[in-house]
Length: 182
Image (cartoon, rainbow, N blue to C red; front, side):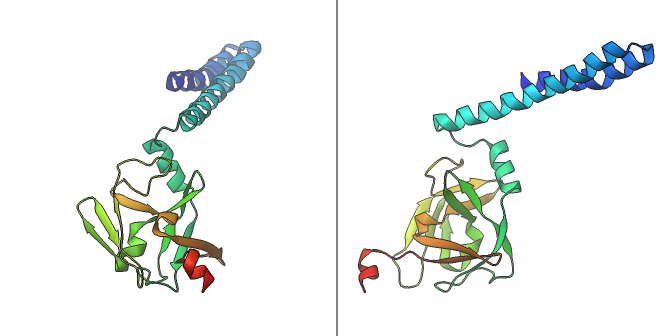
């Protein structure tokens, strides 16, 4: 429905204004101009409201929403003192944020990760292996998901903490109960 509304607004804006000016009818040109902008604006507001409604319901993020999130997510060179990042700090990766959770491409962890079909296992030095099954959509609390042929993993699900310094994303092991006491 919003697509039709947006197209109608654009049509009214372009052709209505043009033909009204051509006919010398300035009030009709003004109405076409303002009406076109109003229809297009209302269409955008409905789209935004619909996205907020779906988010409030807890439904998975749509492909379009995820595409926009990835497009506007900041990219960082990733470093870690606790494991070898792939391919070192020479490549930048998008840091995706959803509901306060941070996700990175599994390619960052290629040196410590193995994959068998849809199961990904991460073997960090001095830690127990962590395994996740890939889901095909992103939803709140997802540990590992796929989008557009790429897999992304939650940083906190890997028991890692992140810190952004000077345009670099630093990943380190999270301190756990007994380790914090030592």
